[in-house]
Length: 87
Image (tube, rainbow, N blue to C red; front, top):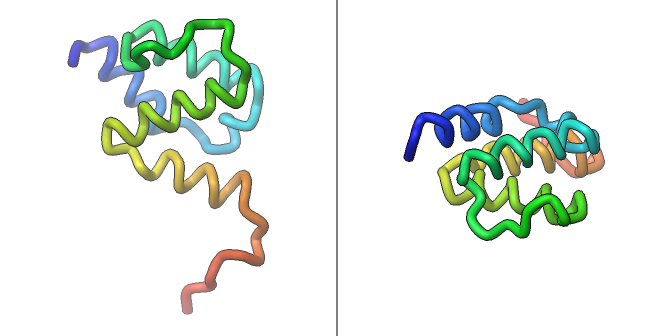
């Protein structure tokens, strides 16, 4: 893995989950990761936003960044009532 890929993966790991729901932020992060060659065979810029999000999730999972997907689901997609409260 080269330095550019490491920087792109670090940006992915540090991204606010809510920013992935913002079209401009999603596209910018996807482009950054795509340009670093961390996304192999992603189909380039012709993808729709759902495919971009899936590509970022695949990259995250392939590089051990499971928390990217988990935090997105917890903070953006899941209704608050579905999560267990820790006491």
